[in-house]
Length: 65
Image (cartoon, rainbow, N blue to C red):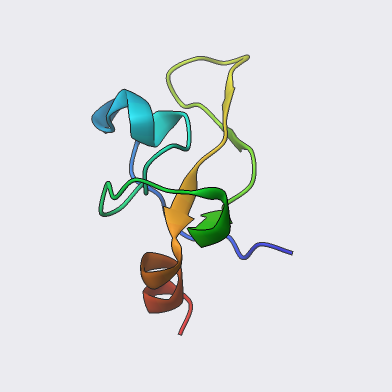
């Protein structure tokens, strides 16, 4: 189960960060082996939309300690 952590507002992120290709915090490019799925989240700007944020393992470990 993924712990809920505060995420940046999707409106402030790049396209790559919004679609899970880059880390939501440090913007590093992600590959399948080095990404942590943060689970589907409601998009605050669009009532019926969902976004699927991901982050790098370094940022994930730094926020879950």
